Length: 205
Image (cartoon, rainbow, N blue to C red; front, side, top):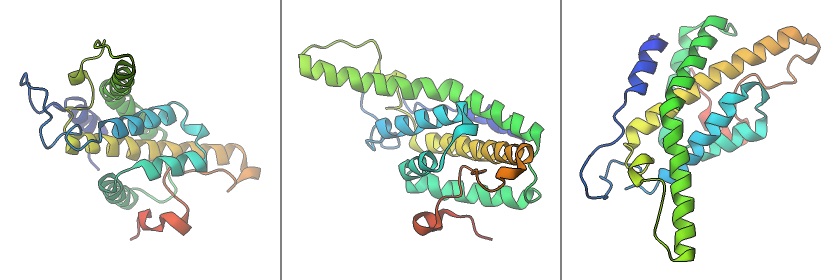
């Protein structure tokens, strides 16, 4: 398995912005050009909220997040989870690895989360200015996800989800050990969506 510390360094150093040109026209490879910047901002902010309280994730919230994911991220996540499942013993989750994943999530969100929040702030400001017919903003467009490379942003989101999934499973396992009388009553995984409408997402051998 690839070193998590190496992976986190890679993602924390991603050059999201494809161009430093003065023209505010997003290149075709960016979220802005694909009109996805605001949607991805919502996804990232939701992941951030879930990561801060991973032990409290319920089925409804989990499914809401799944439905928000684009097909490209779903496919990448399915591949990653299959690889992870084959590389570790079944139903064995390690505290040190969970701690590493917590660190990875923190490092990625440290630089990705501000872009997402700025995107939401910028959009809200633009909507307000249109209504008030004024032109001023305290958030510049290049400080948002508008110029973020789509493929690299999706890779970072996938990494966040893989880590969050592991942490959720670890927390679920610890909960069941502490409260065996509730065994099976609490979801131990972020990504085991309901089979009736999410079956295509399950990683099959």
